[in-house]
Image (cartoon, rainbow, N blue to C red; front, side):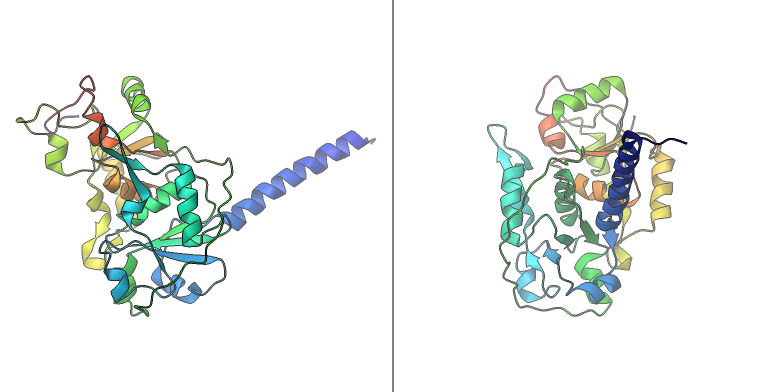
Length: 302
């Protein structure tokens, strides 16, 4: 059998591509959520950085996970004028923020809060949006960490400034208003409203209230077990909840709330469940309801 140089080169090129894909999956595939026991064993690992996003800014000064740097939720947001809608900060602003925290492209980022991932989910979503290869959220956050008897400290960690080098590997996990309107027409995605029942149903006294037509109701707190240190409920239980309301991984999902805060936690939950086609509508109802021609539905109907 005759094999020419072109055939050999093509085979070698294919092998290199396959090896690179396999290697990149092994090197950069981290679990969406990790457990306290694992983190306690790896807290001092080189290249790992823990980010504290607890709800109370004074909490960090009282006690936090050793080595964690502090980041407030507000630092991830900007107010768009003139409509005052809060959206994520721009990518260049995010790169600068990451650098100030000591995060580079190679850093394995572990994020936690004390609210069942409500704040940490936002950071996780934005890291995935820019294609950061290694990021996880601590299941149960600071609450679980303390209840399991792990060490805490009140000594602040001064970040070692880094340079974040962006790459063109963005994850398609964000959707704008114009695309939301298009998805309503085509019905190609499942909308999930993660607000309270009252918000979802709308008020007869308010003309611009209710939910996006066709949106399913699944409040974000359904995913959290408050009696079990604010950990996520078992994944099988959560998957059963979603299937019951008509959601499956086979169809793209769009999550929204009022400002994108609660929806980012639901984004985290869906990613932990293995959903790969999930988008967050960052403007959420704060933006959507300002458009007078944007359709809204009231009551519990879909």
